[in-house]
View (cartoon, rainbow over the protein chains, first blue to last red):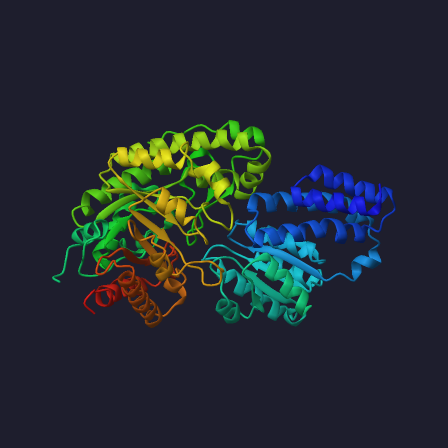
Length: 212
Length: 365
């Protein structure tokens, strides 16, 4: 199979939400000794960008986006371990988390997907994440960016605690903090000392690419 | 025009007739537990029908709302189906352990006895506050729609992906949820409430397109069936959808509810302001309620929320006039979603919304 055919297969698999084709394409890419980064960027990520654009244009909706994300990760699971460590070290490091007290994580998962598709090395801390864990991970993993989310009002204060904790830990200046979720706003981001409030996952990835 | 009673005003709105002023109902539900004695915990409030009802009665006494609509929270049905609900006292409860973790689990759902659990608290509590308040205001119960109850029981992400890969399993589970909702509707039908408010959250364009929403909730098997049953049981249909970009054509023009409650997201392109909703004809036949940011009840000053309410009253009155709905209270000044049931919520801000609407919502000002 030609390189172009493999890349198209990966991209099409993501667009159509077919994890098994993504796995197959990823294995074929490695078998053909393709650069795994090229397979990711010009195959999987290209497909995810198409899906992102279609979602923004409301041509596809959340079920399709989630399936495409699952498909992208199916391919990434095979391709990422094949990337030489030296290539990985140049990637910007981000973490995503839904703050403690909240388990609504669809938005966070879409952000994780778009950041991954945007070329970031993403650590997903999950949902209902203790604030202390967020602070410690930022420092221990030398994160360049932290994307925090909540869909609930009472848990918004956890975002402030996270930012305050980063200041206390001395790591705040090393990490960009962006927040998202329905109850948050740019003014709330400013109030708590976060760097940015994103309206959607694409904006979050675009903003971080710009500032990092 | 002379001052009208709450019920006269609501009836005027429903019948497209003139009224003295706009109506108001900040969706203050769980937060009213703070008005019982020295305040009770959320757990006490959500597990005891008398306390549940008392909060609405005390809220009416203190704030003099135009409606009483009994929202508890969105984990009632999932909890009674067996999902674990985490109830941090000062947070809205949520499901932290879903009951559906595999495709096979969709098959295992069974309608629980609505005379037990929090379903029973909701129904019995609704009856208790309706007994006291129905002579004063239009009352309504509140229930989760089938798709919402399913996503609460399984996790939204799982359900959305299974819609794509295993739609028949999702439909089988939705059929059970609809049966559960049928039992709930019949229960609410015995409470004396004038309406039943359905939470059809997933009818929004951030999550589902028209085709998906129609297939998984909006069709005759699910929402249309439940709406018809609501009417048959003697209650008006109301709908609450606090998501961004709601399916207004489906949920207002097709479902034809008496009241539709919605939110406004200024940062989301395409989110409609109150005046845009009215200009779009959505308030022509339905009382539309919205769209004060619920955050203002915690984080806003009383001056700020007063100004926001005043501006919204003016915006709404102007838009109604432009639409030819002069002096008819077709738009209800409300919060876009529930007033957060948080201990830090400022009760004075709830009062400010009501008092400001009474003053600046008058049609002769």
